[in-house]
Amino acid sequence: MRTEASILHLDLDAFFAAVEQRDKPSLRAKPVIVGGIGGRGVVSTASYEARVFGVHSAMRMVDARNKAPMAAVLSGRFQAYRQSSRIVMGLLSELSPLIEPLSLDEAFVDLEAGNVDCSDLNKTEQLMSELRAELTKRTEGLNASIGVGTSKLIAKVASEIAKPNGQLLIPPGAELALLSPLRVRAIPGIGPATVERLAVLGIHTVADIQTARETELEHELGTRAANWLKQIAFAKDDRAVEPYREAKSISLEDTFATDIIDREELARIIVSDAVLVARQLAKHQVFARTVTIKVRLPDFTTYTRSRTLSGATDRAERIAHVAQDLLAGIDTPNGVRLLGVGTANFTQAAQEELFDEDAGRITEEVRQNAPTSRGSRHIHATWRPGDDITHDTLGRGWVWGAGTTVVTVRFESRATGIGPVRSFPIDDPELHPIDPLPMEWERATDDLVT
Image (tube, rainbow, N blue to C red; front, side, top):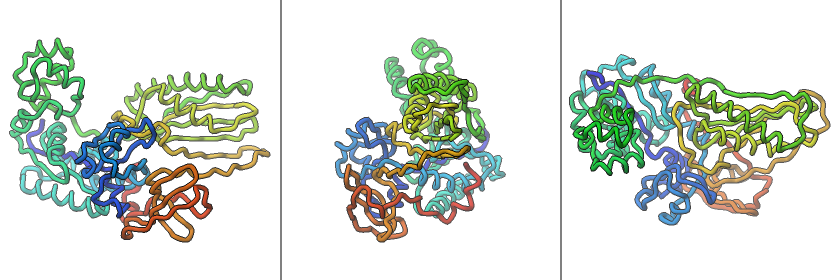
């Protein structure tokens, strides 16, 4: 723990939902739920207007719809979220060279490494206010909560208390006064199962942990967890802010002596390769957000397909499931000469997948390495609620709803006011997917965070 409050934790408020409200004028100040829209869907983020009705992250989407039937339910636009995240991380890089992103919407910053004078608490408070204001400006309307303290633990707890759209600086020496009255669930890393086990011992607050006998904690939680809990309860946290440079990918390829036609055999090979890839992920202590496959046909036509997940995983079965699903979309009547399974887009923190398994978009790259008579296929877009869309005549909008034969579009963007709603045949040739609107600060920060 440091002698000065020089570690900052920033957390964007209701990030996914806030981006949707910013980009869709008709949803501003309205309940918005982002997550999986299918039968197994789960809530990823709920706007504060939706939380009033009891909707929260990780809730089943069917339950969320029942609690807030008037809410807009959107499937998520990761390109837009990454766009704003890059801008935020670029802003933080102006404060310090030591930034530790935890996810798209959350990061630690080592102010000391940025030569910020943290000895004057008033100046630190002013820096926090200026940072929040500049963030709102550069992201064109998003808000963040910020905590600053002598450790990662204190900074994160402080930012959580400051929510929404607030800031809290914990002066050196005030750490125990902050932690002691809090419920144990407020400590990062303590989940519902641990809360229940501590409740058996009559432990409900951090102060209860401080006075609990270590032997009791060890008996209930094990020696390692008990020691960690005691240290944290007394604000003992010396973890450094550690920027992480992502490896590009971890993958495995098999080139077969004879072309394999049997799809079940290919599926078994994918499972075997996924196990080995998962072991490498565990060895490097990373989790993958993107799963890829590479398929080479007998005529040397090579397909590479990838799916970006709504969370991050190191589980072999999840990698295999996605890879098999990707393979199912490739026509291989004459067999496969090469098959590869890979992962990319790494994070050091596991992020639970809160969207449907098939909610991630699939991208395809086809390279003709040798002449072939195979013709190209026309692929129809699949419209999901919230997707960016454009009409040849009416311009930019977003998918308000889609069925089997009709797609309904609201024509508006963050650059307009509330727009009209129109419906079209699902395969209307004048409708096209489109990228999110560019942002003024996007270009300047695009190379800073990948």
